[in-house]
Image: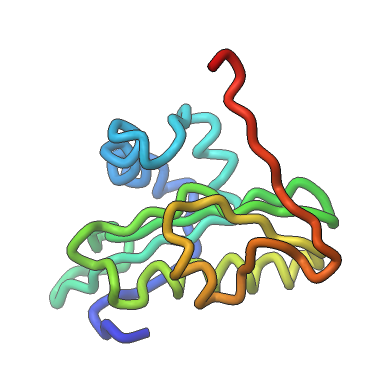
Length: 147
């Protein structure tokens, strides 16, 4: 990763409150879907936190969160990258890319066949190997009900 002052680790249940606080502005601005505490707690099973390393801090749990991502494994066939968020001042430094790589590795470890990501940051996802369609031309279709 380009920024040596960032550490990425697996999230734990102890991170729930800090993750909620970190994600709330992204949810308030509708950059991310609203999530309840219970939903976030379930996502922590396959989630990763990027923290800014602070000299003199006791442990990584004390470092401020600057990025977060979760992988929701639906089945051995499909998983989805969710809640990808990086603090504005840490964007374009490889933090998001490293978080996505953690999800790709976790999906590989879980033997998931297809990984889905929905984002407004297509360039970053494409740099991580994602594309608009799988080789066999599967596509996602969307509809906004009631509009």
